[in-house]
Amino acid sequence: MNTLEEILEDIEWRKTQLLIAKTLPFLHTYSFDHKVYLIKYSIPTIYAIWEGFVQNSFQIYIRELNKLNLTKNDFCINILTHTIDAAFPQLKEYPNEFIGKMNFVDKLDKYWVDNFTISSIVNTESNIEIEVLNRLCLRFNLNPFPKNPFKLQLQDLLRFRNRISHGDINLIINQENIEDFTTRIEGFISLIEILMELLYEEMLNAFNVSKSYLKSTTANS
Image (cartoon, rainbow, N blue to C red; front, top):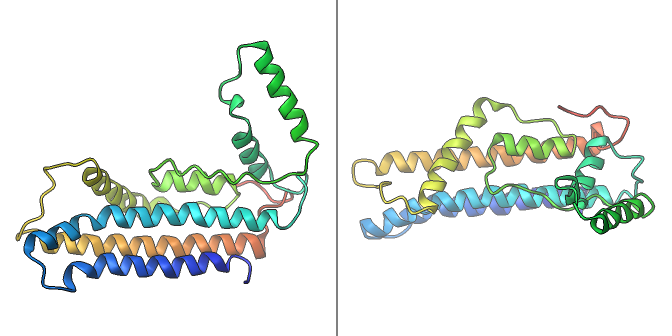
């Protein structure tokens, strides 16, 4: 399998899942209530497909970087910082007890001696807006996504996903607005398909062309 081809295969699978979410309410002669149910709960499904893709694609990218068998001195500061940040939660809350401090220093000392492996921890914060996505990109020195038009579109998806997931009884689909909901879902699916392709293209370029994972490159900000 070619480098990062696994991401491309994942995209194709997720597009199939998105197509199911889009078409399932209209494939059979459902009652109106059953059709409304399928339409409504397709929105959390669409978001889950998106979050799963982001998590999986970064995991694949990390695995491919680790296969290069580079040393910590070869990687850019972004990736070094990502790995240290993931390996040492003490950096967020330094131990008060001296024994805890000794354990931290001992672990840190061994870290610089052992072979370097990029941490596979990818925190999607269960809320992948454009800012969260760009924070992940920054950790791996990938180019950020433009806020326009993706910020408002992702916020719209998350707003509906959160309302449905949290059981908002005021979100009602009826005969008057069902077409609007259907159009909105089609827009969400198109958005996710575009973002998946763009993230794949950015990772592919970073890995094979710009090699932005290397220390010689300038960290994105």
